[in-house]
Image (cartoon, rainbow, N blue to C red; front, side, top):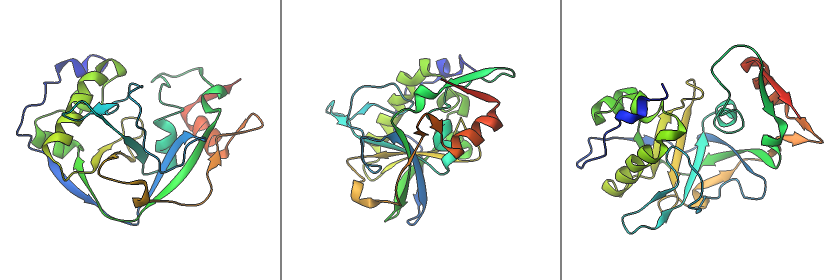
Length: 216
């Protein structure tokens, strides 16, 4: 699996992408730093994620916002992202959760997204193992595809795919220049990941199902 992304070809226009409407009123979930509003986009060039940071054709940073369709998926994509695929003792430090909160967002309008699920990937000419089921070592290559899709489809507002970390849910990346924070209503107060050193009930429950031991 770790070497799968090495065969990812560079994007070449025209891209045979599938565009889908992601309907308004859906609830989305985020795990993020408590110091930022839940509906804020990340304008930083720092980091190393599958589809961010990315740049437009003028080398300007494209602000992005990651969301997931369930709280479990949001946790798997963040605090539990690096849990190994193995049995036995799997420690996760509570320090990974310091300053983090879980927030819910509600879409106020429909979104037009590039579908990166398995069938749509076949139309695009890619295998899931080339773009989605890759490790951090391949993120510089996968980001090139996000940039190419952004450039070729100016009407597209983000990307949608079946999460590698939780295949029962979807992950969504939104493009800041094409979706404003006002399109995403914050749904109630955020829930701290840690309170006086104790993880939230959702984190404890997921850790049990993962076979993870939470450590100081």
